[in-house]
Length: 249
Length: 310
Ligand SMILES: Cc1cc2nc3c(=O)[nH]c(=O)nc-3n(C[C@H](O)[C@H](O)[C@H](O)COP(=O)(O)OP(=O)(O)OC[C@H]3O[C@@H](n4cnc5c(N)ncnc54)[C@H](O)[C@@H]3O)c2cc1C
Ligand SMILES: Nc1ncnc2c1ncn2[C@@H]1O[C@H](COP(=O)(O)O)[C@@H](O)[C@H]1O
Image (tube, rainbow over all chains, first blue to last red; front, side, top):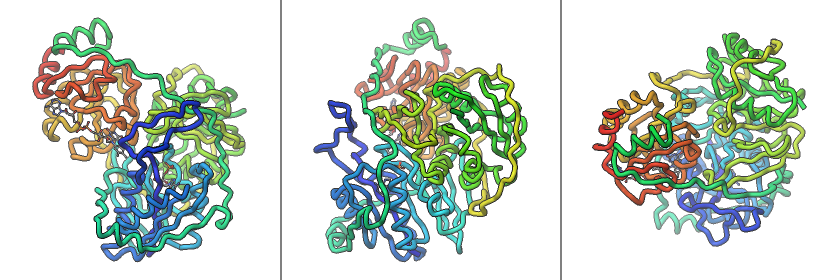
């Protein structure tokens, strides 16, 4: 079974995002970019399936500018067998990404797509669900455990209030939550080897997908800053402040 | 303009989240209907009928909807969607799961986690862990939206008298079936609804210490318990205690962060709380930058002391 893993290139999670001065977008020039952390978890899940003999091939896909090649090289170094870049300068929204992924799924016929639950830049949490919808497949979001069976999979999901386990029909789309696994790091020899692995480029046009945005960005802004308060010297003063100043207890 | 609000419930109780989503619907304006979809949930529908300003409650019941699975919820709402200009749900584990699926089936964008209604087609939402707000306009004929409940003040529970309509003809896609459900038994208020939240991080050191120190404090304050990602990953508490960018968003009157450093991903889930208290031994911990009252000290001493004087 082939496994397709979409990986997004995002601003590194350690870096605080700031709006551009004119409010037209987010300032990314010169800042460190990384693979979306949830996609690292998705890659790790795919690699473990391959190591246990349940997956035959891992295909990493990234949609965006040419620089997404870096992210794909990371995926190849981690363990993907080959990579596909869907290259475009258009600002992609989740529905457009889902349509691009659908076109690749039709071409590649994977038995499973493992996405991250959320890209930490747009915080949309949509693409996996949208892809499943467009394919008419089952979906299991926020996965913390994956067990593959014959034609079906048992997936434990993180939900409000606890955990639920679903039995879903394959092929399916799974999205990863934080507790699914702890992703490995790429080793230097594997980074070297990754340079020789196949990385193909396609475009939305060749996939015949209309990626025009449905949402127009009017502006981005910095949220009102929260005023830091004071340091209290001891528990007695804290109690006094909470009772008499903030009046919350 | 008619808006459909999809109720958040557990088949028995209408959750408060619904009343926050309704507030967002009222900010958009127009007629509002509420959909109650589930199994054995007619009491939920009755509660929904009294919500102020709601003219119609649609009740869909069936085995296929018992667990609010994404495939069946989508198929159900797809059949109703064309009557509406806006479909609104909570940005909860349930809403986040199925609403994007619905949007894709309708070939429209989904707008996640809105915190402000700028106009009926323009909304503001946080991105980059809440470091930035983005204002977006939708050109789609139907707007599918999840609402950050903490950003909208709940409407009252009563005041309305909506008519009830039954929706029939549910089908089971057969794609997915729930085989197990493990809910944490809560003896205290729900995290999202609590007036006070006591939250613990890696600084607690162990699951035992988390319980020994934070449970008595939470008991005194009738508080919900929360946690940082580190505390969840380390197994101190279950996953649904996680507050933050990729966990729950809370905005209680009082949030007490104990042994939490204040990473931006954590702040994303609590920085709109009314009053924030931080207890941390590191005077430079970033949590102090958002705390109204910071107490620098060893939590092993400070927390029992605080519990004792409350
Ligand atoms: C993709 C992604 C998503 C994430 N999502 C979330 C999220 O939703 N929520 C979230 O919380 N995090 C999230 N994180 C993790 C986040 O970046 C931080 O790693 C995490 O919040 C740190 O948890 P912490 O504050 O408990 O631990 P630490 O950062 O290790 O802080 C522990 C604190 O305890 C203090 N301390 C230690 N001992 C004592 C003592 N005896 N007395 C007093 N103080 C003490 C220390 O001074 C320190 O400040 C995410 C990260 C990524 C990459
Ligand atoms: N441009 C992209 N290229 C590849 N994968 C993507 C892209 N955008 C989103 N994804 C995938 O979809 C997941 C959820 O993203 P989002 O819906 O934007 O929060 C990510 O974790 C990725 O797995």
